[in-house]
Every structure is written in structure tokens, then in C-alpha cells.
Image (cartoon, rainbow, N blue to C red):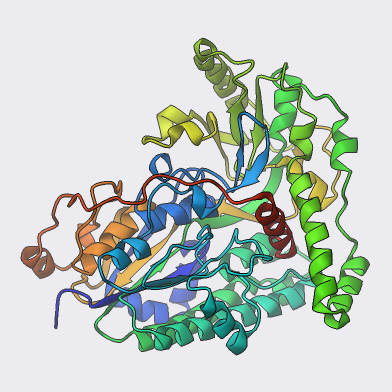
Length: 544
């Protein structure tokens, strides 16, 4: 048997964690994953900091750290205009593996990988995932593949729509796994590829919304306490079909961008900045963020019924109107910041803090950073006695590379059970601006630092457990499995322990090959219409 894979298939399970997987494996409830682990290598996969979807999947795709690829959050704050914008692949400074391999003459494809719109032009296809505007007609590459997919499977959607009935939402998620599997198999059969990646988002969604049901004290524990496990079992069934279709000469990888765990409390970071005279508002916080309330359960049910009978043109017009409203919500908080007196503000979904260059001179940056570290790390939740922040770090301490200047000036990392409450969440969730630092949250599950990596196929060692895998290491490792050189610009390394000794002897892991880095320069971000529609889609999915 060859020690080099002819092709690679990557199955992404967004947010998957061994904390759920290992008990299921022990109970025999994930037999297909168990078989893959037995004949391959696996281990914890350390996510990026912060461990959020757009940052981590971009590090996976490019083999680079955030300081090189330039994506640091789902949202970014423009220092000049103070506008809050969604990230997109147009902001990514490094090409993904499917583009790199395509340029080397190896057909490649990617489906549902977050932050892949606008799509790369490849010999193969790219069907973008999360953070793709819904109103863009030609959002795939090639454009005509969208019509072929929708003729076979209906509207392209990165994960099922949120339903106010949790039992129905779980049903939607399970069906979503099945639908994603069918699409994946159809794409694999439609065009021979040397590299293919398909991401399932349902594992992330079920954990955000159903983690709390795991508690035996939850009133719905009896019927929904195993919701997360049910989705994992469905993912395992899909994996079995995908592995069978891939064939024995294929390297098959399982990748998750981060882990998951319980979320019990949120902290309103901007409230602390206000209380410590670092952030000044020109308007009333509660009144401003109450400018838009989400629809009640009854209104959502009525809207769903209306969508079933109204003409597409009417629904599209309504969507565009709502999309513009969502884009404004992202900027509600920024609109009442006094930019002449505020030293800093927290924006994005991960608790990053941006300094205001109009107020904070270069000579004052170190002092402000030290003040933030001391103050935030010293916070104690009076209800729990816990510290909500476990790390507060200057961007220069955390990141290295040409894109560091685009990162938040200070990056925070919450302790177990906590998450930063983001300004736009207050408006979208209609929970009211908190009067204190702490509040509840719509979700009961949050992201954790360690996800999942597994690899099996030609040349891979059997039954090996990896101890030090990081997100940027995945792509160099897959390139090695395919017999391809790793470019100089990649920060990740080949996980040599994943391969059999005879493989390494025949093909020693080489230093970076210095492949051409055409396309490393970033291009301008998408327009406001795209951002507005993106916000609408994320809200409908329950992610915003």
C-alpha cells in the first residue's frame, strides 16, 4: 500500500469536543469514528485565541496564525470611521489550501467552510459557509454550481434555521446533518478532487442551545438532555458514509475549530470600561440598545407561516429591509461612543478591546494595557466568587506577523462558564442593557480552547494519540499526507508523530519549500449590502 495519499477528505465538525465524544465512544455509540481512530492518529486540537469560528477556520484553511492571515474576530472596528463590519475572505491575507493545491494542478473543493466568501477561483468549487451574504446571486465558484445544488437539494444554507420550539430545532439539526451528508456525497461523486473539505455546523449549534438541558435539574432534561449526543451520533453515521465513499487511498481527517462547554454567566465588558472612565457615551445605553427588539415567539411563528405563502419577491424585499436594520444594530453602540473622550471600547464577539488613537497616544499604550490587565484580572463575580477573565493580553504579546495591526489592541479570554456580552446581542436578544457587570445569556454552551483532530489513511500511524496539535498545523500535515511541499509562509508544522516510521523514513519531513505566495496581499472588504444580509442570515440561524 502506498505511503502517500492520492487525495484528502476533511470532515469538519464545528465545535466538536472529546468531552462529548469519549463517553459516546466508550458506550459504542460512535462506531465509525471509533474505527477511524483505531487505524489513525488523533488528539486534542488547540484552537486560536480567541477560539471563535472565523478565526480558527481561517487558521485551519491557511496553515497560519491570525497575525499572518488577518482575521481576529467575526466583527472588526474601523479605526477611522468607527464602523463595525463583518469579516470576509476578502480580508484574508493568505490563500487557503484549496487555492494553493488548485494552483499546483490538483483539483480541490470546499463546502460550508466559514469565512470563504468571496470564493477563491479554483479548479474545482467553493461553496462558502457562515458569513456569506444571502442576497448575493453568484456567491459560489463556479457560479453555475449553485443552480445545480439548489435543483437537487433546495436553498443553500450553512445550518438549519432556529425554531422557538427546542424539540423542533433539534429535529431541524438532525435533518441538517443528513442534508449536509447527502450534499457532501453528491459533490464527491460529481467531480474527482484531490482535496475536499465539508464542514458540518450542527455540532456547534446544538451545543450553544442545548448544553443546559444536560443538567438533570432542567425541566426538559427527560426529553432533550441527550440532544447533543443525538447530533453527534448522526454525525458519526454521516462520517461512515463519507469514509466509505472516499476509498482506501484517501487521507480522511476530522477537524473541529474549537471545543465546547457550559455557559452560565456573561460579563458586560463595556460596562467596566464605562465605570472606570475609559469609555464615555453620548447617549443613553438602555434606550439606544432597546431600539430594536426581536420578534416574540408568536410573531416568529406568524412570520414563518407568511414565508410559506408569500411570493419570493415580497420575501426578498422584506429580507433586504430587515438586513439593513441588522447592519444598523451592529453599529448602535458605536454610534453613542464619545470618540473624543473615550480611550477604548470593546467590539466583536470575543471581547477584544480597541484603543482609540485620537485619545491614546503611542507612548500611552503600555500604561493603558497594564491598567486593563490589572483591572480586568482583578474582577470577582460576587455571586460565584470566580474571576470572569483568565487572561488579558496585548496583541503584540499574542500575535506575530504582518497583520497584527488589525487585531484588537488587547485580547481577553474568559474563565470557565463566562462569556463577554457583546453590545449588539443586547439589542437582538431584547434582554435589556444590564445595570451591573453580570447578566445571563441566550446560550447555555460556549466555545472552549481544545477541539478535535483525527487523521487516517495511507502512511498514517495506527492508534497514535497526538499531544501538541495546533490549528495551523492541520494544513501542513495534510499537505505532507498528499506528498506536497509546505510553503514558507505557513506558521503550522507537519505533525510528524501522526505518520508511521516507514513513511517518515521514505519521505523525511522537509523544511518549508518556499512555494509561490501569489495572492498574499489582502483586498478590500465587501460592501454594506453584503454585511447587512449576512447579519440577517446569522440572526435567523440563532447565531446572533
